[in-house]
Image (tube, rainbow, N blue to C red; front, side, top):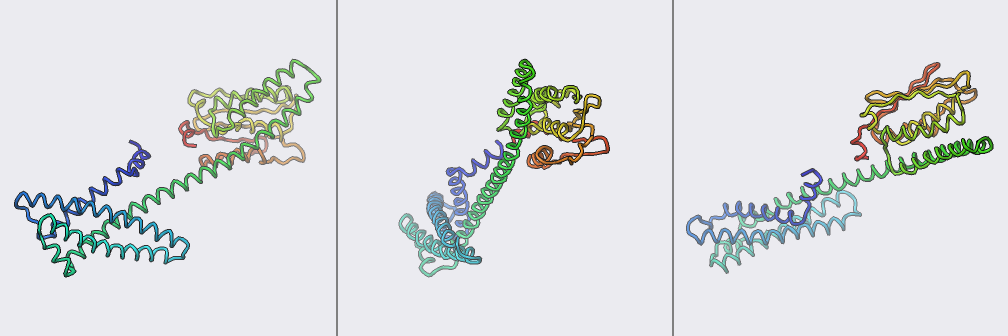
Length: 363
């Protein structure tokens, strides 16, 4: 049984009442040990003990539920008041209810003992407001109240913790969806502008270009609800995207991609992370057929490393706008890990952490 199943079982109403009955029966045994009218001799004594415990449990359940009702009503009425009224008034109300409960117990116990066992000891103690009977019943009420308070605040703490976690995930998901929504126009406007010029040159190449573009489009649609994808899935998408790049730039860009191992293929990445890094490299660097841009993608046990020649275009600063900044924020939202970025005079390198498969079920 896992933690969630255990918590659900403990919060079940039937389990709650069974636990209360067991606790109240234990209190009745303790109470009997202080009542000198109970003796261990004779069969009737055993019956009286058990019948007293039955009465104690029944009355205790009513008082317990009454205390809860009083607590809810007072807390609701004091919700809009300032501290310390939100604490003092409910506590004072519960103490007064406890005094009433103690007298109710003494009166019920007295009539019960007289009616069933013709025993007037409890009535004598109650009629003279015996310290032992009234104070003892009040102390047991306080013990029940404290126990119930612990359960109440533990339940509220659990609910507050779950609500906070739910809000955190919803907020994180909303922010993540905003980041993913940036990818669609950023990618497709560039691709359609290339296709516009290509249709006048070659119908066959244009048809293949549209086919590969549709694969890219399908990938983004299929992964729209996914926050993480496998390296193998991302590389399949990247192959279609690189076809579009090669059509546009021919031999001006050279791609060198290592083949990942089995474990590396199953590792996770944010969708379109590799594509956005390649697109940034193409966008911000100078290249030509005689001086091609080299883009390398290689894998380690913990990272995928994307590096490219750094030849910044004149008048263009290497931006961290939609692409690189998007990737960094998505990693921060998922695991809090950072994306390592290194820039030298002739090389730009981005190191993306490979995330474990188990993370997909958690995010």
